Image 1 (tube, rainbow, N blue to C red):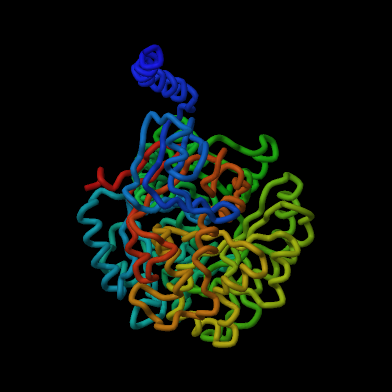
Image 2 (spheres, rainbow, N blue to C red):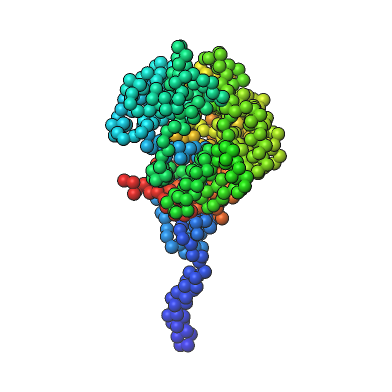
Length: 556
């Protein structure tokens, strides 16, 4: 009887004992802010692990792993169910122009205009919507898209807009098409030589209205500056556009101090949440400021580098080549400043412990800068070549030997492929847009878009690097297909390698414990879907520091 009573007592007590034990276990579970579940999470760690769940606390990743394990270990205030979709580290754009892109949102969009006449029609429509502008501004024209591929003349703009200065930036940002009134504002109606640039002339010797590289500045400096209030408004709009395509960190390639201060103030106020790695323009004023004050480093702003321009662009024949252009035997392009001036800049930057990031397109520009870099690099300075568009094979050895990072933009290859051979010739084309060769030489690549030169979508970067085709699937075999990159290397170039290029690999670039919880949720698996499906990928959610900054649901 006593045994029976004891058994009954134990049965009655066991739920209470289990409840107490469970309560004790719950108190031992670590409290976290967010648990991401029901996902395929590409961590991009050293083993390229794919996890099911991710725990986040105070903006940092606590752990990744199996859902069941993390649910047992953590008590989450919020749970994000990814619905079986795919999570990637927030994408970097390793070379872009964020402020420049924001400014274009208040200009006429000329990208894809098929003729000068279409440019005029778009400008008329834009001016009708914006009748009180002091200057008529536009960006994106490209004479290589026209049946007549010669540069246009100011006469066309004069006929349509005789009463307002017109300034139209070419797609590459290294040339401008202006009207007579704009030339008058800059006192440029007489021909003159420009170091590191040119004013294209008519047969009669008068300016045609086409300005190349440094000549662009002679007119651009007369355009009334955008107000701080307007630029701030446009930056927030640009930020949201970037979040919508999965960008969480941007490397803005070349800014004056006033713009750096504006970005910092917007971030400090909490309105600008985008993380930014800013390359300061290598002006005497900027160099003096940072020599005195050192680097800027906050949770969202990192300024420790200078942007230098060695040459111009291939499309406007400003890129500096070792041999003449195939389609212009009398031209080789030019350095935008002398080799001695570049050497002096690198000497100053090396002495400050800053990173040098130099725009180099032509093979002569790349060779010149690589050899100058070699004079100053001794260890882990991580100096970069931006674009590295045409590099002779014998110059590739500099990248690994001196730890130089190639920062490239895969959509440049698929944008330029229609006319690149006419500029370079078949033999030299083999050394252009050679991303696989650069990767083999350097061991890593930082990938970006150069927006607004190209569209902001990183999915187009991924597609172009993988397929080497345009959005119509041309050419069927790919443009220089031997230079295509693997999916894994592309993803690294958009995440951990780009972070490394910014000295940020210990902060983000992969989804690992201790790193900032910057991640995106995508509707398809970029690592497995057909290449043709990649450009159509949709971002469902974007998170920065564990906080959701974009939701596709809210955009409907």
